[in-house]
Length: 342
Image 1 (cartoon, rainbow, N blue to C red):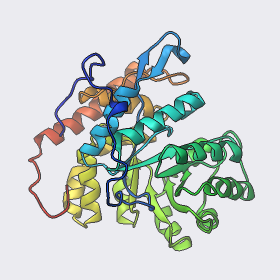
Image 2: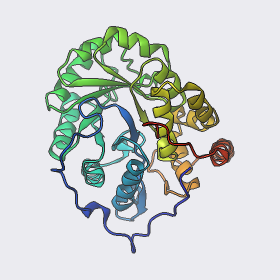
Image 3: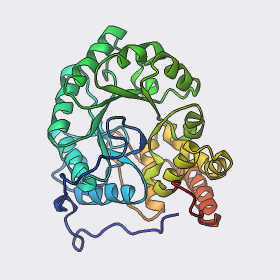
Image 4: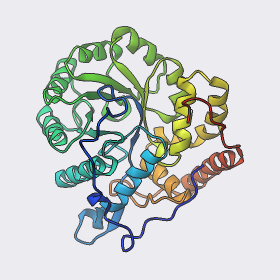
């Protein structure tokens, strides 16, 4: 388990946004063009600022430090401006600054898959154009938000985003959007040039095989942390993940064990984490993951409205789940080197 680390002190640390990045270093990025591997839907730290919305501004230095920490601990990419990154609470200028910070922080070492969610195709496409200008490797895109689109409207939405030219990961989250990208709909999306993957968050692990049957050329990416092992066993090749914000090295190892077919080891690692991972599928997942970060010595901090604090009962439940996870990881012996598995 990573050793607890205190929140970086802005007075003493270098400006991570100005870290030199060698964009011309040879060699492909991991999973380039496929948007697979462990991509972390990054939580966004804030700093108090009376002039900012809700009195909180994105702390870009702390965010850059966090992105770098995730990659240094074995994750394959970061996903700024997702639901966990509170994209809907950010201004357009803030969204761009956050994505740029992620690109600069990870450089050539990892993927940056930017959330470009928007109410309409024109808005999502514009966010994708900006992401391309700023060096993103791909985009994650929900169907139209705030509107229950039909299949033709969904296809049009993704066609517009895909025209930008970046690899596109469609995001199926019917719990929040009320739009279900069924396997049959995903088959239509897979026919669009540049749509290369789908993040599946319906909660139905049967979808993995069904999607693979309907769209065999599309990468299926696990979206729910508490179903990740099951999804990987059914053929998912990626994990767009929440709790790796808290446990990056352990999550990268879990992914590698599952992909290598070392199932006994994977299950032994997974089972004590699942109670914490279930918070990724709850309404308060952002607050829960940020508190988990605080508990392992990172900085999660507060959320912007409409997200409020967890109730005393929720805190007690979450803390118990986190205690089980951290105690199990602390008790486990460090893994012996074994091929490519981290």
